Length: 533
Image 1: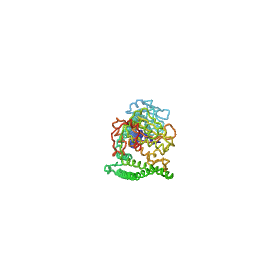
Image 2: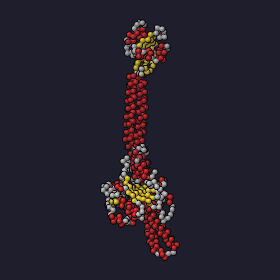
Image 3: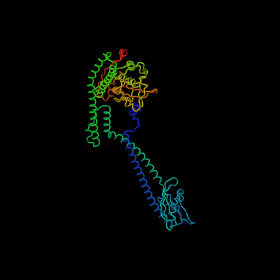
Image 4: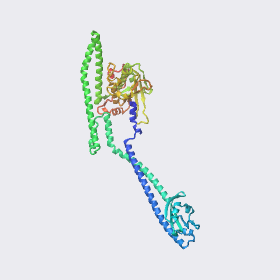
């Protein structure tokens, strides 16, 4: 994955490929609430069911025993009377049945409701009452309904009395209660998730502030600190805040020390380098009077001094970036003529420049000198390491409608036919003093490893970025790309946008606000040498 893909993946994490901490807290609260609600619902349903059924069984048992005594009394008075009338006269009876002389040839069965008569009784219950002469109660299902039957043996084992009661009212009530508990559980879970997400905002606010501070430090705002007084009362966060502030202070001090050292060394070297260059110029003027070996030594010395001079100049510029002492001068630049003239004036007139037709009249608000410097570094890099550039491409990049972080930009790419850049090196190649597989080599045509690092700094200062990728035509080589915001001269917020895009220089950066269009004289006369430096 190249640098562009990595940054795109980081910017699109909001799409849901990874759940955030707040969402994880909300999900955890919802799951705990769901678990507790389910447990409570099951307990409630079980206890309610047992309570209702136990009460119903106790009630029907008392009622059946009372009715059995009434039937027994009636049989004692007149065992041959109208049994249907006897059963009909019972108070509060539900589906009564009576078996007279069970197990004999004179056995008689009487039921008020044939649907729930003796034949509907469970065999186990009848055997217990008739054969074992013992009372019994049993729940069962008959005719698709929940039922409970109670059996009582009458005196002298001459009869057995049964009653069947329906439990469908309890069953319907429990079903309604279950649906209510399910709905309540769902609503409670949703409410808990919303409450957890809302509450996590306040819970995670300290961590969010620490994360924002760390992001600012990563972007170069080394003066960022977190107010320790806000967290002094928190025994968990106070050490973290204190250690963070100490870490940033140590980092700022070290970077400032290194930047001062590089700047001081570079300044100290400029004077002797000026003397050396002046002496070499005198020697070069008398070159014809020197023997051949002396001329060769002079050429080698001149090449090394020139390379050393370029190193010192690059170090000075890098140190200015580190110190935040940079100045962004915005111009209204005709983009395509600028790129074309830069390629031609750098001696690459035979390299084709291709651009989107819609960019033909585009005027870009940018720092002209820095854009030229980036393009020059790309072209020179291709010349040194890839046998020269093969093409320059200027393209418009429209924002992705599915990505709110995307914006309209312009991309300038320089392609070569060299060995390419391995995937593992594509990010590190823009580091300082990184020359890929030629690190440690020496030669007049080998750079010092600061050109691409400076290109990255120039782009970042303007709110852009740089990366290297494969050639779009699939051929051997690499494409070095710089992407800049497509800000026109009429964009009222162009300066604010650019300053916001360079947080590492937010306190020291000065935007001139002077916009100058590229004149025909600029294009005809070429670029000034100092613009390529």
